[in-house]
Amino acid sequence: MSMELHVLLKQSKIPSVASWSNAIRDAGLPLVIPHEFNIVTDSGWQPFRFWEISSGVEVSFDSSIDEEIKCYPALGPLKRHFDSLVSFRWGGDVDECAVAVLVASTLAQVVDGVLYDPQENLQQNGREALVMARETIAQLFPGK
Image 1: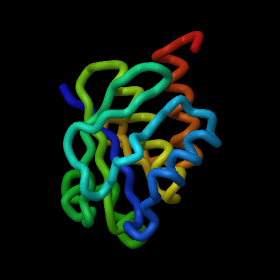
Image 2: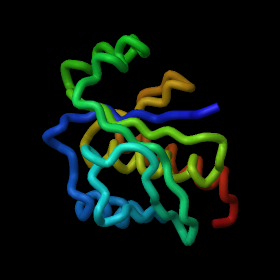
Image 3: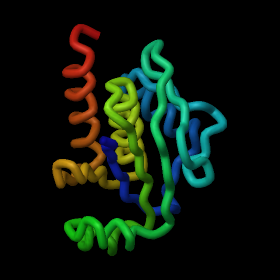
Image 4: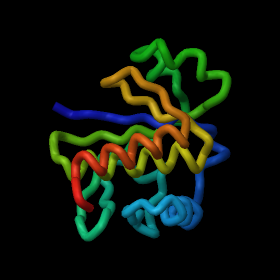
């Protein structure tokens, strides 16, 4: 079974890899984004690293949130604030889960977006998403 997280954002706020990486470093999170990664044009499986673990997650960008609103009507009120969506999908692998949570939460923080977890029907702003990411990593990797 695959899982997914979505980040709703304004396309005009998509960060460079350098600014996104700086925000990750400033947050003290153990994630490395490849320098050549382009969130708009690179879709499908993308490699990431956290700590010394090489893993990845499936990434897709959509310049409209209309389809997602059809699937998840709770997102409807957010349409007036956001015009785009980045989705992160993974299977049951714990490393992939960690990557997805870290990448999605930091993106939500950097772009002043909203992280949406459809499994829980949960919407979080970037600050809340970073708290969730830290808690998730602590649960998945106790003692690190």
